[in-house]
Image 1: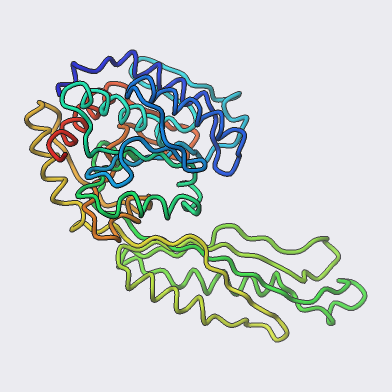
Image 2 (image 1 turned 45 degrees about the vertical axis):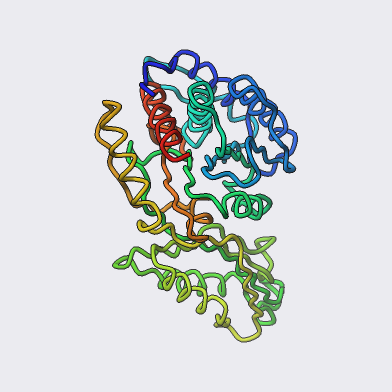
Amino acid sequence: MSPDRFDQAVMTADLGTLVSAESPSGEPEALARCRAEVAALGERLLGSSPVAHGEHLRWGPERPKVLVLGHYDTVWPVGTLARRPFTVDGHRATGPGCFDMKAGLVQAFHALSLVARTGGLEGVGLLVTSDEETGSATSRGLIEETAGSATAVLVAEPSADGALKTSRKGLARYELEITGRAAHTGLDPQKGVNAAVELAHQILAVSALAAPERGTTVTPSVAAAGTTVNTVPDSARLAVDVRAFDRAELDRVDRWMRNRRPVLPGVRLAVREGARRGPLRRSASFGLFQRAVTLSVELGLPPLREAAVGGGSDGNLIAALGVPTLDGLGAVGGGAHSEDEWVDLRGMPERAALLAALLTRLR
């Protein structure tokens, strides 16, 4: 399973193909174009067509013993490629979605291809989904069903500065809908109930829920209020993002959010829950990480490190089922969700070799 068995130039070309197929979550036409490229890559390297589950693609058995998991959607809107096309400069590749997580998909397909040629893929599956970036609303059931009886799940999400991810924070998202009463700001502002002022109260209260000493963040993110400058705002919205390593912390914030009351008289407040994922605990991943460390030494790869990160992934969903899960096996690089997202192309053969070795040992 040496890295020398992987052709970096071919992997780079495959990465360019996927990055050049823009695939923002929730854009059916763009997703369909990228999904066709993902399917074609799998057909070329694995010799078989995927089973389609709506916008999601699966290779291998319905209930694999070992599952490789990834997604092809990105956070970048259609048109990003026009100003930031896939570019290679030495050992560095850039372009929307290259790091999160199209390089990881390329590595996974090439690793599975080598395993297929050297011993077969019996008991091994690959699931590629289309909505991870927006909370996996349509893929969650499929992920849990496919992974529920596995003995190991390997997630091809990007690394954390080269480190594998043995812990991830759980997350919860909420939307606060504030209803006040409109009025003319010049003629009779006293008849209004200002939803924007209530929004300000709620932003401060929500921010105070954070507990940095426990690694808990509570972030008011998207906020909006009002319609015209001369009208007392009668409505406002606030999106809230919660992250915590401890499920009890998620539950603490959840109780507060569900029982929240407005500050201003006459305001109505509704709280709606969005995406939710429990934490990926180190106990769910450390055994697999130790195997990866051993295999990395055997392959002559750079020493492996582990990291605890704030971002969630579909690995959180699987770890919650009690299935051993190792995350961050994808690209080496950085800048996820940022304009300077990049991939170290030299790391692609190395990480494909590590994944192939893990699959061979685990199956």
